[in-house]
Amino acid sequence: MTDLLPLLQEFHREKLAMMLRHVAGARLIGQYDANNTYQYIINREEAQLTWVATAIGELGGEVPDAEEPVRAANGKADAAARAILEEDGTDAARFVDHWRPRIAAMNNARHAKMLRVILGETLEQKRFFDQALAGRQDLLGRRGEQLGPSHGEVLSSRWIE
Image 1 (tube, rainbow, N blue to C red):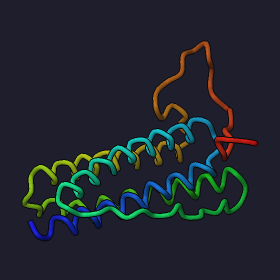
Image 2 (image 1 turned 45 degrees about the horizontal axis):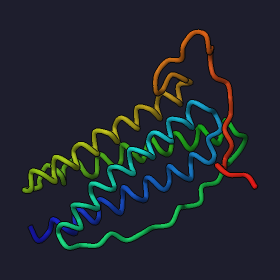
Image 3 (image 1 turned 30 degrees about the vertical axis):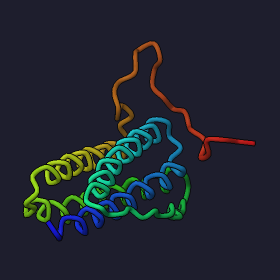
Image 4 (image 1 turned 180 degrees about the vertical axis):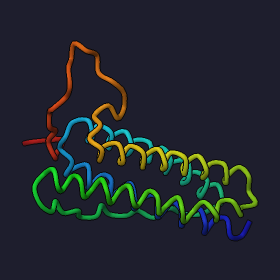
């Protein structure tokens, strides 16, 4: 049990860094469907981080904050978006590969199950990134025929003054 708290804190720190990279990446992904998928991913990661933070708090630990990283849009919009999607897909796979054996070795079944659920959702995120790279626009579901395909762009900032 003594190594459970540091493990959960490390997991939280890495997942928080990943979520903050997704927030920064979403600012650079203009295509509506891909950006909407990033919003979905970020929402799920916020929920996951809440679960882990609650477990850390129950064990008497603290969860530090982190700052959003700067991600640069290298190249034209399509090339930059592609690079971000590739990075995020690679990061998701690396995260799962790093944590899967560590979680398998955990003695605490409750917390291990929670972390396995998060790994499963991280693999789902990787699938979204791969599908976006393949040009799919139905990442979160299909549009009704009357709406037609989406070709819209979103703003990089939610508020404009």
